[in-house]
Picture 1 (tube, rainbow, N blue to C red):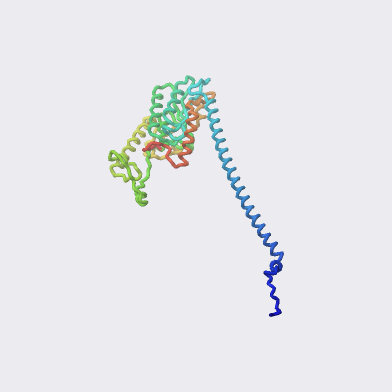
Picture 2 (tube, rainbow, N blue to C red; picture 1 turned 30 degrees about the horizontal axis):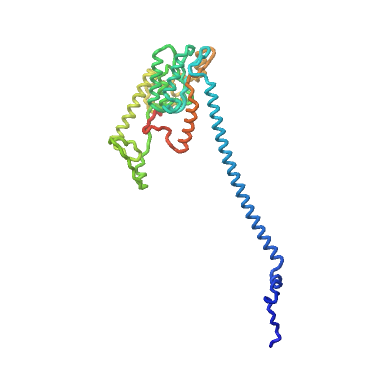
Length: 348
């Protein structure tokens, strides 16, 4: 038998000492430190995520609170405005100019609609201390029907006779707005006001080739050969285009004839007057589209020793105004048309 030791360190209990000698204390401490740092890093990331989510939640809460606050302020302001505004045709002491505001796009669904404007005109006309009726205009135009109705109402008042009617242009009286103004006895504007744009416009798109290239099939069911001739996804035939052009031409002729009837021989014979161009106040005076360069304050000082203006424009119902503004915001956000009319052309 050999004298060599047959002791097995794995069976004789010497393995732990061998491992301890193989792995130093520094290595164990370093490993523990790495584990601790990883735990700290994970905890930091978790805390950071919680803080980011909390900040995001706070921002949304702040946004909604501000939105509700703005809506509340607008509602309260509208109620106060409606409560403190003098009623249409209310008692006004002393002589004054009766003012009717025509602002924004002329449309049956907008504040500048014929019903509202005509109500204000009648109230200002019937007021005994109103020495003149003033149309205070700041509008790019709009519906030919609404414009024509107001024009006719002004002409009826003008023909009845005992009170001057003056149209005062602020920034702009274009197309349908000028249509209304031309019915007045006198039109004044600031030097830089924009006046004119006598014409009719209809705009649309031809998208037939676009949907064909996308492999989209358009399905339209109609009764009547021309029912869908303004459909932007369908081809328009030459006779349909000629028909629609005649509709626009007819409206244009009515527009021109009424402007000539209102302005008479004050209009220049320059053919560009009725070409759709728009002019500054100074240019418009040279063309006979306006009579003088003046502001609404100038008009009041000219006619009264103590200039006084009273607004006879019917106040818009508070809820109607709020719903209209919210509706306009929604249509702008969604990219929808502001009018529900399937076919729409304008004096603009």
